[in-house]
Length: 356
Image (cartoon, rainbow, N blue to C red; front, top):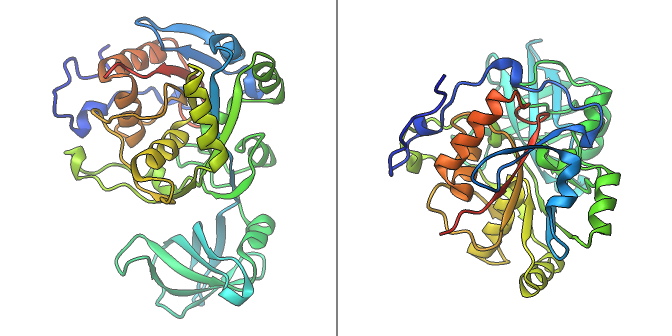
């Protein structure tokens, strides 16, 4: 069965990144152990089936692994309007966490009929959310709310894990642990940097013993990562903004890696977006909507560890830009035939950057 367009045109359209994915390949639960997942080695001309625990042996002493250390918050909150109508908020960004700044957040709102600004919503757990208006623009997808207490504390106590829409079960205690990396540090993401979910302490120890360095960035993954691309001409698509930081220590680690002839290995597409945003726009940049499509000039990343992505998604476009469209499509065709797990709780693959 041919899952992909046989000949991709030079001017890519959305349809070029479509493919037929058997729904049973969408992983609904993580592997029994973090590092027990499969790894598709896509660095060469032909795919090689491996285990994730093979990763340390595939990297070289002097390489630098860069992780996204964002921490997923329990950003899904439920409540009701004064009329009794049920609603759901998904906190996208905490705007002012402290009482003297108003406890303001920006959130997606799911409700049958939108309340008017000034409405006080009664939230499950006994707190309130007052609707202040849209954010950041009058007709944008997000709403600005004032919560009655510290947003992070309220989410920790009353929130639910914001599992992706393709995971069909309600969040559980297992999801609270496993939809989070072992090195999550800075709270603010509403989606996990999923390529990093495969790492456990044993694999990290093996990487360190092999002389592979580590560094981190922070990019708070937003719900926009799951929004479908609607424009057939991909150049017409506008990416969502996400907050990020590449600390000075990471800039220094990258420079040292390049100087010794090592390779920068980005763990996940969010790490790629952070590193390439900083390289493109400078260290002062802290909010990015970079859109990486075929033809992008990569400045930093040499290898990419990533999960398998949704059809027609911006992440399919990013990995195609990194390793080449035809190569990625061949890898995905193999992954489907070999029954790899897809998306957040699925398996991983290792990619090399194509020659310019």
